[in-house]
Length: 252
Image 1 (tube, helix red, strand yellow):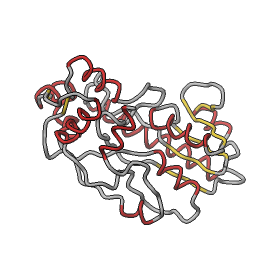
Image 2: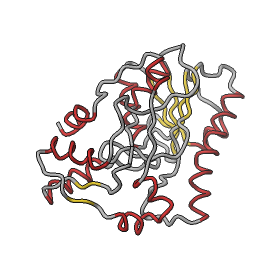
Image 3: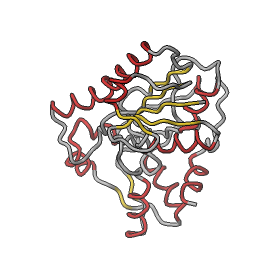
C-alpha cells in the first residue's frame, strides 16, 4: 500500500514507518520540514492529498516537554496541533479524487510507560529508554516514578499496521499491552532485572511536580487501567504481551 503518515518523523512515527517499509509498503511523511519522501503540511494544504491507499495522523505537540511551562498558551498549542493537522488531513481526504481506503487517527493526550516509549513531538528524537538506561548505568539502579497505583502501558506500532492491513478493522482500538497493567515500582523492578541492576532509586513526587507542574505530573504519577479488548478481538497478535519479555527484548 501507499501510506501517508502525518507526524511520521517522531518516535512512534519512525517505528511505524520502519515497520510499514519492512512489510513492503510505500510511505510518505507529512512533516514541518521538507525532505526525501516527505511533503510539508503547507504543501498538503495547497496541493492536496498525494495519491495514497491509507492515511495516518500521529502529529501533536509533546505535552510533556519539560522546557515548556504548562500555561494557557502551551495548552492551546497542545490541542491545536492535534486538531489543525487532523482537520487539514480530513479536508484533503474529502477533496481527493480517490480518497484512501483507510484513515487512522491516534487520538487523546497520553503518556506511555517510561523506558519503552513516550509521546513525542514531530521531528523530535527517540524515547525515554535511553534516559532511563543511562541513569541505571550511572547509578547502578533502576529509577522509578513514585505512586504504586500508576498504571501506564505501551503503544505498539504493530497495532496501527494491523489496522491498516486488515479490511475488517473499524472503530476505536486501545493501543496497550494485553497483560495486566503494572505499577511503576513493579516496572522498575522488571527493568532492573532486565539490566542486571537493583531497583532502589525512587524519584520523589515533588521533583516531578517541580519539572512538569501539578496538572501534567498527574500523567506520570497516576494512570488508568486500559484493556485492549477490541484490539484482541480484531485479531492483533502481540509479539511481547508480557512486560518482562518486552523489557528483555528492548535491553537486548
